[in-house]
Each structure stands twice: as C-alpha cells, then as structure tokens.
Image (tube, rainbow, N blue to C red; front, side, top):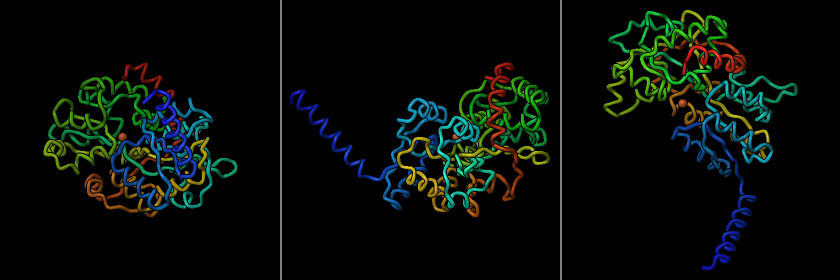
Amino acid sequence: MSKTVKSLLAIGILAAAGIASAQEQVINLYSARHYPTDEALYSGFTKATGIKVQRVDSDDAGIMARLKAEGSASPADVILLVDAARLYRGEVDGLFLPVRSKVLEDAIPANLRATPTADGGISWFGLSTRARVIVYNKARVNREDVDTYEELGAPKNKEKLCIRSGSHPYNLSLFGAVMEHMGEQKTEQWLKGMVDNMARWPKGGDTDQIKAVAAGECDIAVSNSYYLARLMRSDKPADKAVVEKVGVVFPNQQSWGTHLNIAGGAVARHTKHEANAIKFLEYLASPEAQNYFANANNEWPAAKGVVLENPALTAMTGGKPFKSETIPIGAVGANSTKVQQMLDRVGFR
Ligand code: FE
C-alpha cells in the first residue's frame, strides 16, 4: 500500500469514528480510582442508560494538572478523585462545574459534599468514605500505646513507625485535620516526633506499611481502612499470615474521632455533556452503584440509607459504629500548604 493511500484510509477511519462519536452518547471520565471493581460500575451505567464511559486513568495530581493544561479544550465530563483535600482544591481552582441535582442533594449528606455556591450549585459530591487507621503488631505493642494519632509522635514509640510519604494526599489530609484539632505549633512538634519514631524512611503504599509490621520491620503503621480490609478478605496464605499478626485501632475515640477521607466526583468545568455527566454522578449515588463504588473496595457508602454488610469492615469495627471527626473538609484542604512546609522543615519525606 502506498503512503498516500494509507493516510487517506487513516483519515477515512478517523472521520468515521468522529461521526460515530458525535451520534453516540458518551461521557469522558477522568478517574483517580485504581480499583478493578469499578469496571462493573461503568458497564452497569452503560447498560442502564446507553451512555458509554471513556476513561482516562491517572492519580489525583495528574488529573488536576491535565485539567489545568487542557483548559476550555478539555474533553473531561466527570472527574473522580480519592482525597477530600484534592476535591476541595479542584473546587477552589475552578476545575469543577457546580451543578444542581435533587437526586444527589437527597442522596449525599451535606457534610460529604461541597458547600453550595450562591445560586445553589454544588461543586463535588462524596461517594464513599474511608478511615485512616493505626495498625500495630499485636505481639509487640500495647493497644493503649497507639490508640491516638498523637501517640504516633510520642517518644515511647521511638523507631517503631512505618508510614508512607508525608506528601501523599492521604497523609496531607490526615495531618491537615490534626492541625485543625491541635493547632500549628503542636502539629509541627508531632510531625517531628513521627520522624524520630520512624523505623525506616517512608517508602511504598499503605499495604506495604502493614506488611512491614507483620514482617517485623516496624511495629506500628498508618493505613486507609480499605487496604487492611482487602488483606482481611484475601485468600492468599501470605495475606492471611499478615492479618493474623496485626491489630487495628480507630484512633481518638475518646477525643475528636478517627480521621475520615472521602472519594468523590465532580462535573468538569468545561464539559460538553453536562446532562450525561450529572446522570453518571446520580448513578454512582444509587444503592446498586454504591455497592460497587464503596463496598467492593471495602469503603463505607456515602449515600444516605445505603447500608451494606461488609464482613471485613464489620470485623474491623467489632460491628459497632465508631466516632469519626466532624471538621469542615475545606479546612483540611486549606491547611495542606502549611502542612507541606512543616514536613519540609522537620524532614518528613
Ligand atoms: Fe488508595
């Protein structure tokens, strides 16, 4: 085949694809969720509505950088992020389109969504929650020595701690929340205490920290609840052995409560498919979708009245409700710059 024929063919194929996508119902989804069970979620939506979901995967920071770079030319319709501070940042940076939806407003509690704009639009909606818990080696640590976040930085826990990078959104949000409770000065001292308590420099994700506790590399770790739940539900003998060795604490039950983070969604500022994008978020808040979005990833559903029995989460909490903190998400997001500066000062990598 000659080059010219090839490129003419290519143009033909592109043109045909262009026509098809103009007629087709599509949403472009930028997703920071990296959980395999989300596939069933998207096909469920397509089945119910005929709207195809085209997905771009990245992490929270990658998605936000991409949205900024693309500006008004962005094809994004819906954005899914996995951290409350990032959702807040996206709102402040104007990356989201505030929307009105009775379905979403009825389904998602006010404390798990953005504060409405002057004309009632809401920039983002929480779709699931996860707790930032403390995991410890049952044979080597007394539970009472790790039942608060403050104790992670206490001298008694010297060289016992494994934790992922301080700059990771999950930690920035936790530390931003702690700053809201303890104030700046005490928070910086606490962060310094954690650096002193590290058994090794931060590396890997939350699951790696749990495994390091089981392996004896450290005695205490910090993790999102669903990573531990995933190990608890695993059939692999190695994972079972890890779970056997560790205990879990929902910190600060006697004071401000355990830090919760949120995964959530927003309509993109420059969407060309606003109605479909809202439809997609409404679908994610439905009981059926919440089962995939939250439960399948061992998170708690955000939608009101959706109660899902998850054996690992029930085992983790002893089947009882736990006290979670109640601070505005905006405050946590607003603290993250200061927290990052503290981390630099105390050498928390
Ligand atoms: Fe995660």
